[in-house]
Length: 179
Ligand SMILES: CC(C)(COP(=O)(O)OP(=O)(O)OC[C@H]1O[C@@H](n2cnc3c(N)ncnc32)[C@H](O)[C@@H]1OP(=O)(O)O)[C@@H](O)C(=O)NCCC(=O)NCCS
Image 1 (tube, rainbow, N blue to C red):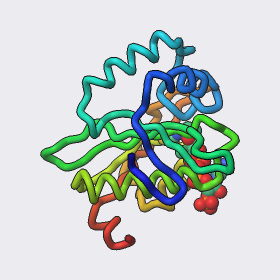
Image 2: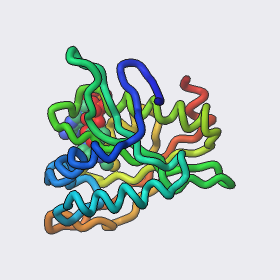
Image 3: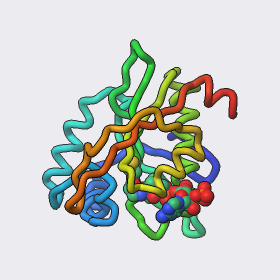
């Protein structure tokens, strides 16, 4: 496991899939992700099997936080498009438990994943894409060292209008200077 302060990432299991489907079918969660259609368990099972053929550093991880009742799954986090030549990866995450939004878990998860990316995987750049209306996400990304490096104009059509998609990244040198 990847273990931080009151937060940890573990490998996703088949038994997590129904929970993922429930989270990803929630329009409030889905509006910030590139998912447009109602999702079935069968679809998620296929995604899981396909995912297993990816390299270990690109596997989807379950984000768990410590509560009075023990460890609780609240969402997923993963690195994608890991490039071993350019030493970069794209980060994706979502907290599916809406009751756990804005409690600082996103920032904790981002800090832990950046430490893992730079200190364990020896990456040099971690980037992500975020829709311009995702103010909570953008704030969490800025707080953990991501800077906006570009903007894809009107790249996302959502709820009847086009949104810009921000590209944000953090470099290892910037992260090291702050940690
Ligand atoms: C984006 C996400 C990962 C952030 O995690 P989180 O635990 O909710 O965020 P945090 O509590 O760590 O930080 C959020 C920050 O935004 C602030 N915030 C909350 N709502 C806000 C809003 N409507 N506008 C501006 N800032 C807001 C919080 O106060 C906090 O700022 P702080 O550092 O001053 O305390 C999570 O909300 C989530 O998964 N959302 C749904 C899916 C999603 O958006 N995934 C990411 C796609 S790029």
